[in-house]
Length: 344
Ligand SMILES: NC(=O)C1=CN([C@@H]2O[C@H](COP(=O)(O)OP(=O)(O)OC[C@H]3O[C@@H](n4cnc5c(N)ncnc54)[C@H](OP(=O)(O)O)[C@@H]3O)[C@@H](O)[C@H]2O)C=CC1
Ligand SMILES: O=C(CO)COP(=O)(O)O
Ligand SMILES: [Zn+2]
Image (cartoon, rainbow, N blue to C red; front, side, top):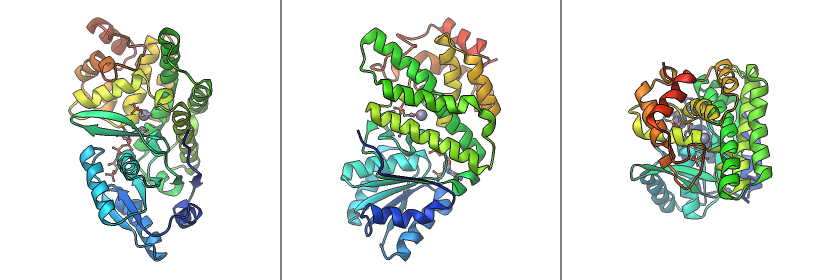
């Protein structure tokens, strides 16, 4: 099991990066992978911090989580003789840096600028290749530096999306238990309990999550860290990714304009909880309090794509058994989407 050695969360901790690097015996040879927006927000700050220490860093922006971008970063980091990689930004930049560092067999540090997904700490990378998204086992970050002052200034939509990604742990664990019972799939009680407890913390007090509040960011970041740790314990994304994630991945494929990963997973959780016979109304209510989308129109996605995604979701990852089983009939898909008021 791989876990980060240092996890630093709090206001202005980006300026502790030098100490974190020193603790890990990482000095010269940083390669910073950042995004187009997040470069100005934090990528250049990280560059300046390391440059002022005389560590001679290199920096590149990545535009998408694709194998093309991973190959580009591997090439640039090799040319620069880099000794470690730092992913600074959103889910896509972090995933690209994570996979590139694994391919190069170099240490990786995660510096998220938004609390929008639990990949900030996980030993997985979600990368597009040949039109399909793959969840790849990678080395976990050696350290995570989550500056809550930066994250609190990110658009609130990103924080609400992170809550959707956490709440989705409920149905992910139910799917995992189902697969364990029906298919004798290996199951970790500890990873499942950690994942469920993480979702429970948010469900118990969703009103604590508010825009521009450093305390809200701290709650969500800590939950995302726990969720990522649960994946590392399990050695797969099972504790945090079930049928609701398959629905989100399917939506990414069928909808012309998909929404944020965590937003789609939250809406997926409402519908998958209905299929599990659980309290889907509570999930919906909790997302509403947080201010995350609960309907197709709030996602900015037409109803017909929701139905299309529901029909193909079981094919996204056939080896991962979930409540979707061999797939929904068109009538069942329409029923779950209408009853849960995801479509009107
Ligand atoms: N590896 C894993 O275990 C997991 C991976 N994922 C993956 O992560 C991705 C989703 O990540 P997510 O972060 O939701 O979405 P994106 O990576 O699509 O980022 C959304 C946008 O937010 C911007 N952004 C980030 N931080 C800030 C900020 N502080 N201020 C202003 N804008 C900001 C980004 O800018 P910029 O253009 O600079 O990037 C980007 O345009 C998906 O590809 C998903 O599959 C999700 C969960 C787990
Ligand atoms: O998004 C994830 C967990 O929140 C990772 O899951 P996937 O394995 O579905 O990419
Ligand atoms: Zn997710």
